Length: 453
Image 1 (tube, rainbow, N blue to C red):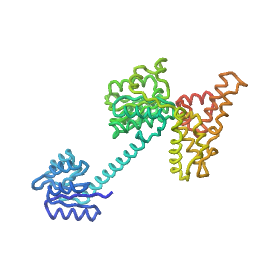
Image 2: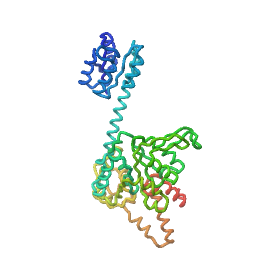
Image 3: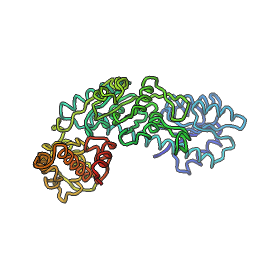
Image 4: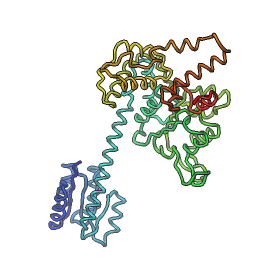
């Protein structure tokens, strides 16, 4: 980035000396011998840093600071002052000055302040670009939705985004619940604040409360320092709680209190912390049924269920499959340096007819595997996994009534599905659980029950 520094001083010798020094340091430098000229230059040019004397005829450095901030709040102003005016300079910093220097000017100190200001501006610029990229990636228009079912989902999400209402997103694992949650955040007034996500199913029960609310040093064994929870990290922004149906009863009580009173305490702490967050929750479970059987608090359910968005499974919106395939093929080809020009009609037909127990996430995984392993420029049926090409094989296993009781056959089929999911995800239990549509905790229970390694 090219930085422009405006030097303002009514003493010609000082002005020329500082400007000459900064020009030698390869900065673009403008000069003004009076505040009125400085204001004119700021209106005509993009100024990054203003280096101004504190005492000048007609206008002080603090008054100039105020005028410059009206022109552009992003201008960093550094005041130069005599030793006796330091109190005035520090007061100016409260009004928005970036820093100050005492006369005579230490040139090395000047360079350090300028470097600090330029690094800060670079960081702001990079963060702005990153935020723009995130907004582009997660805006509603970027979500594939050729089906009327998904159009209804995005229409509802777009209408609720500007509000402060809690949102409950329901749908099978892999349907894109977090993607919709992020789109809601970036279309809301909180888009410049953090989006913080936590997956309840991926955390042991004894750690979930600490993960959400934080803890104080010594609150429990292993708590060797204070730790902020996700509620604090999401301050001013959006907290996305995924798999909220997995939250144990004790944590449900504390979560309900946060939603009601907007306050909480860290574990082991007495300080009341204000929670300024917008809550978006997601689940693949039937929370209403869970309230009926007592495993989920009905008052918490009503607090979460202000607006409910139900995302249909991929098998119910097959119109979205071809454009999703195109996006995934292009993305993974670019990421892996592969020259993939397209996909055969037979392969597209195969993927459209597949049932997708893992929904969009499974389709993404299938296409990625095909792109990575393909040796040709066009993906064909042979590039896709056997369970996609021959789905009837599993149906035949499920319908084999030649041996065993009903329970034994169901358990055998469960084991087959679990092993297949683990094979497809290279043994990663979190991803296997997502494909199977169950929590990781439930999967671990099944692995232990069936002795699956």
